[in-house]
Structures are given as C-alpha cells and as structure tokens.
Image (cartoon, rainbow, N blue to C red; front, top):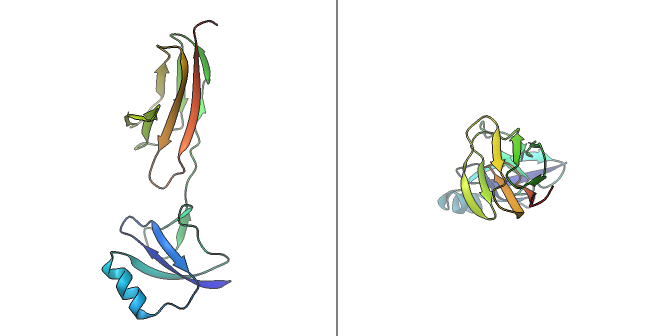
Length: 139
C-alpha cells in the first residue's frame, strides 16, 4: 500500500495522481489552477478515467457501467427497438449526432431507414457505451 496525492477538479474528476513526494508549492500551484488535493492510502495509483472523488471528498468511486437492455439489435424496416435500464441524464447520440438527453421510462426507436446505425450513450461518471443497430429492408 502506498500514499497517493490526488489532484481533482470542481466536478471531482481526477486530473492526476502520484505517489512521489508532493510539497506545499505543488499543492498551491494546483490550487491556483482550480484543482483540489487529497491523500489516500491505496494499493495502486488511481487511473484518471476509471475513478472520481466522492461527494464527501474523502475517498474514490469507480466509474459506472451502463446496464442497458435491448429488445433487439437487428430489426426489419419500420420495426422497433426498446431500450430499458438507461439512467436519467444520459445523452444519446445517433451516428455521432446528439439525439437528446434521456429523462425516464423506456426508450423506443423505430427503424425508418435501412442500414446500420450506431447509438452511443454518454453520462458523466459512466463509461461510454456504444451499440450497433441493424435495420433490414427484408425480414
């Protein structure tokens, strides 16, 4: 176990961490840049894209994974895909273009054009999730 110095921003995203000696000059410089500082005894250095600082600012929390359920990933033209398990506040992208922010309930998509489409789910403190949906002209 090592003592790590963790620097994080206002949204509690870790900017960088080290187990090297960190003096008051470094801490002050980071504070001037808008970063807060904490020390924790950990087994390994926390990866910036996998952990964030909890609300009490006394520990780390792992990023969450989406737990989505798709009724299908291949549908016929004019068929539907229902998606459940999406947390409120998730931004949804269709082929790289924002389709809006999910609020609640079941998300239903209708295949109005044949082809392959990529749906991406993005939410703060979650790993991004991408799913390909195939819409076929023929069943």
